[in-house]
Image (cartoon, rainbow, N blue to C red; front, top):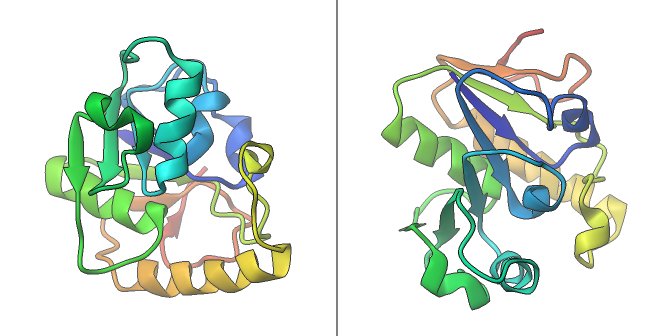
Length: 164
């Protein structure tokens, strides 16, 4: 069982709960989640922030987009590069599928353009982010759906089976 925490605020309901299985956070989720197994990111600024927060390499696994490790490049456990997708959520699902034969429960596919970690980084306007989410959702549509569950029953993304 894998729990993937995306940026939507609905993910805060479970972000710091003890959950069975692997717990994966993306981007600045590490600033808000107390205990998890993998941090997955695609923007250099995340690696830069890691080096500001941690004095030495943290205990969770660090997975970054090739050449985007930022100041934490020397800490990155694994780099990835995909020819498909331009969103961390899409890449994280692809990476997790390649490595684990387990169900993936996705939290935080909210569609409102607001991430719970927005204060950690400058963002585009909400309208621009919502346009980006529509592209992200179309990329999610291209992924195999079996064994991936959307944990936000109010999510506008309908491509994964909903789960409580």
